[in-house]
Length: 483
Image 1 (spheres, one colour):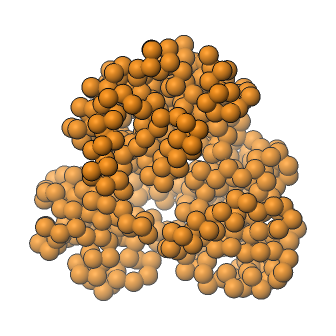
Image 2 (image 1 turned 180 degrees about the vertical axis):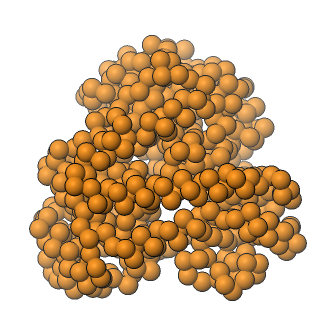
């Protein structure tokens, strides 16, 4: 059955060896923890068995996919529907009438695969639809499962309730998937899901990619940084990516990079503040670029999720990433065709200070959270609002502009996680609008946990510094992930 479904529903001739092992495990009724690089076929490891299980059950049962990334779930649903697979999703960008329509269709058993953020499990109408669906949930896929754990680089509090949600669904066969996970992350994922190493064995791709040349170089000023970017781009023909942490630095240095590479490379720009149609156009040019075009994409980490272009010849970090996990994901986008590719980390002390400042505003203090929540209750108890509203009218001019303004977004995220706010909608530019739900008591804010998280973030940044100064980066990465 698996082979025929693979051919007929996905248009593929064969599975990769690790994919086959994972799918066999799930079809035999076992759980699995999967660590595979982005673009290596993780999604097929739950999409194919979910459809096969439904067929085995006479057309009943749905594959439920928890995903934290709205854009990625929508892309996957669109790709599945283009293949004639009955897939759907609900998230905060879907208008309420359409959400209601999709949830009713879910209850009637019309979907083979259904995507949602784990936060959706707190909604009674969603839980009721899953309970009413013929056959229930036959497979639960927890995508980006590193979001479960405090040891990961992208903690999502709702993900820590995934084990509870799994039990409420009747403990369906479960597969947890991520591109990067240290040993501590893997252990925590299993603990939250109520699994053990024997009940949820690890299936992992090798960390080593012999075709990737990993190196780090220290640079002392912007001129040297631009010179090195141009040299790498010229030496490695084909498509390349240059990652910047800050949009303002990317935009400031882009003209210098364009002048340095001249007509030898075509330079494109991508970051989260560009209009959606501009981002889409840049992505399409990147995806369709041929090796002879020599396209160089200068981007922030907003670019990359779901990218599956096999012939990327270089990935350059113009500013250091905030974690080894982020570094590993981003360099992993190079050389998926197996041909040699160069991955260079340009290290500067100034860039280290930028990441330290990011960590500061990604971890707002209890006093800051209390202050923001109090002002929201006083000024926005009846109206939707976004971070700009709070930044300009509540937090004050000291946070109204520049990088420090980012602390507002993280205050709102934290307050929403605590249940004081809810996400009302996501605007076209990607900004989230919120609405007030209830006051937050001071004792609901765990000061010790906030401090502990900030320390963990700083330790992850320290690990990146160790990587940059390592004489053998591949060996350092192997040791870090312990795979």
